[in-house]
Image 1 (cartoon, rainbow, N blue to C red):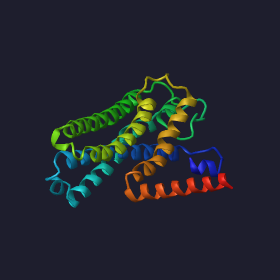
Image 2 (tube, rainbow, N blue to C red; image 1 turned 90 degrees about the horizontal axis):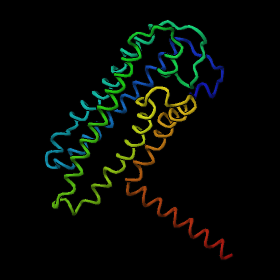
Image 3 (tube, rainbow, N blue to C red; image 1 turned 90 degrees about the vertical axis):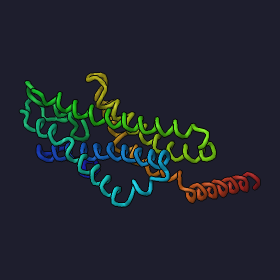
Length: 238
């Protein structure tokens, strides 16, 4: 997208289009697995605090991170291969700013075979499976936090998981509306807006959301706010 904005020639080769398709979906799949890994980390930290250092040892973290990357880049190989083997006819204009399966399939010649069904199946399993895992993990975490023995650290624990839940909601909300909604429910313009949201807006907000957990960032924001208030007051008085 940045390349097209910089050099707006509006042309992409067949191989480059599918390479973009594969990389973008692989990175998206990797993020799904990382969100599940983060929910597992929160579950172990809150529900099994004494065993947490042993379970989440450095080696375990390395294996978990490597597994997320490997699964993410292997998950969508079959759908990409199936779609790339289709015959394409008619207009060669992709009504999108990136190579997405929907706009690509709309350019393919019928019959499309099993490619659309396989593509949708892999997407459903990926998104719904990870959403179920995240909801299950945080359901157990919330039930654990509601116990009497955790009342002292309830506020701190909820603040720990609330920011991650916000990121999960922003990401999966847009992805589910984009790829799991029945075909035909979203116009091309709505599709583009949703795509911009989960490919650009959500990643832009993630560092800001997680930084709000940092006490030093909070203190810096308080000092900045106080200076702004003093500056405004001095201008009003003058």
